[in-house]
Length: 374
Ligand SMILES: NC(=O)c1ccc[n+]([C@@H]2O[C@H](COP(=O)([O-])OP(=O)(O)OC[C@H]3O[C@@H](n4cnc5c(N)ncnc54)[C@H](O)[C@@H]3O)[C@@H](O)[C@H]2O)c1
Image 1 (cartoon, protein in one colour):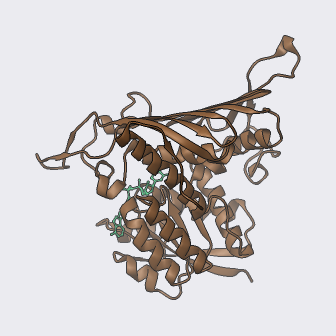
Image 2 (cartoon, rainbow, N blue to C red; image 1 turned 135 degrees about the vertical axis):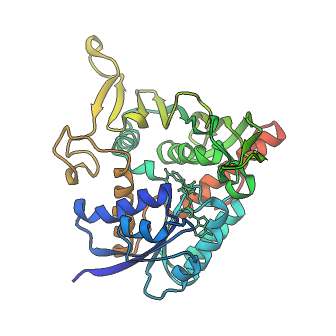
């Protein structure tokens, strides 16, 4: 019989739904060595009991310490605003529970360091939910880079644009104390992580950011509240391997709903990716016959691509939510093999060092080196 892994999840809203769906469905696609059990859902929503039932959880609680203190719970999933991550991670790690924590791992480098260290000390399995690493097209980009097919990497260029903040009422993401930073850490943490994953360590940054919409209406009131996190950020980086990086994040890019895109140019070829077409990777290889040369669109649904032999027959596309299923496959594999999956808290911590350098660079209007030691 498979070992049961009893799970407690803190956070029920956007990510609560995405993660619940993934945990529920992961065993449908993958043969796991453990059996995930959706034991307790925790959140602050008034309809929590209904949500728990709808998502497939056995129990619910509005007190997150109930999840931590429950000796039956083996793994905790943390899907709350950033300012709550540290206390929840530390409490769960001290009880020896495995942890999946949403990105950005924390609201500061020092918080993330404490979280990483306590997770290591308690020998738990830990994962930061940089879910886009698990998209098959991004895995193909990594494979091409690692096999040298793109040659020496010259440029990494990434955009993460959304427009939800242009018209929204006040939410926690507008408050620096709760969110740490704005579009830069919320969206930027994803493309920073992809840059590290695909190209390697970043050594220096120079950045600028701006708040365009200085106040927001508190929902269902006439009260206007100050916005203290950036609406947009642009930064340039240097990588340890000599590549240059160009990053842009925005939550007020009118018309863009979830446009995460990147292009990587190397001495032998290039790749292009756009999350809104996540079943495709654009590939250009210099050594091809010049008469048919050009960017080709590789459809990612064939079984040769990562995870796809467990999905549908070729040509039957996957969606945004499947990234979370792949992430949970890795998380549960990590638990059964007692080996940290990637991206772990270490990746969350390394991304945090870059986020902190970007914030410093904006404040100082100068280049900042990533000096933190790991
Ligand atoms: N990986 C991704 O693609 C992705 C996408 C969106 C958000 N996120 C991250 O996920 C996290 C949550 O974001 P979201 O969009 O789901 O936010 P959200 O506002 O939709 O949900 C926040 C949840 O936290 C819960 N919560 C808040 N305070 C709590 C407390 N004291 N005790 C228990 N529960 C509490 C709320 O009940 C709510 O369910 C953030 O870290 C965010 O950066 C990641």
